[in-house]
Length: 113
Length: 120
Image (cartoon, rainbow over all chains, first blue to last red):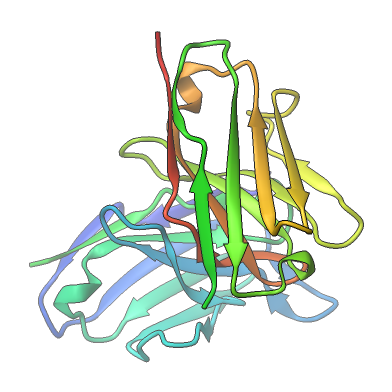
């Protein structure tokens, strides 16, 4: 099984500042045939289902603000919120879809400082 | 507009059974792989099972293999999860989710979830 490890568990960032969340997989999720990283990022607000933000590690889902960006390859990935807004308070999860069992990171809680 | 509506959750005793349903609309249901993902109270996300659109392949987490069965009725645009031999650790909100591109299990739409509580 591919283990997904997120860091930090939580972070507090001032409004308008940058938030950075890391995700590390226990083995590469880069598929050599198509050169794509099978890594997604989700945002979950209290009482709501997760919302897809990023797929293929760096492709932004339709309608997601461009302050959200994903980067990385192989085993190390980052979700960046370039200028934190109040509505970005949530828990963020990474997920690998390279192989089953599909696995999620433990989540990172983002709060306002 | 894509909609996924789960139902069937509730309180059940350990060892009991429940059948969850997920009614889908707003997309060509038969063309997409569909999955169940659960979230225990205050915990993270855990993938449970996937039913592929093509070929009818099914996949399960080890934690539910042999106890849960995923199925789908494409004529009714509905996904199911039959849960048997339920345990306290199965207590969670169960979400159904649609993959963003057939065959790639990253989920672009989720239902609101249905709560399953296993307790005596």
